[in-house]
Image 1: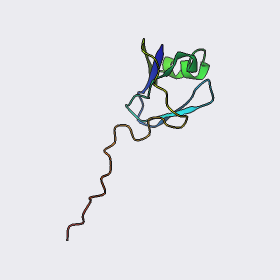
Image 2 (image 1 turned 90 degrees about the vertical axis):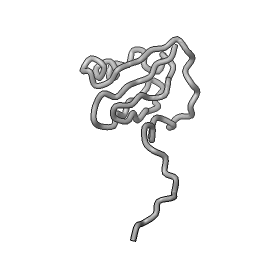
Image 3 (image 1 turned 60 degrees about the horizontal axis):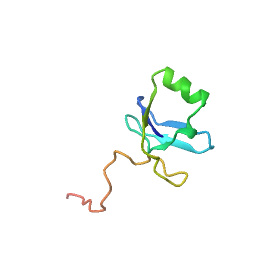
Length: 88
């Protein structure tokens, strides 16, 4: 089973998983899917969920494999194209 975290705050949420990896979840967005074992029994994560600061979304599919450090940075942002021009 996989889990994704949704940040319900207006600030970046840094969440430490059971493996020691940290996720940076942008305000109002969801993290990439992680395995259930990453959040099982995590007291700090449970406290954030109880306070309504994050939501845990569970799904039956397998978690996508991502290298550590590849969290949701940049998710929801427009990609820079490098074609910006100054108007004179």
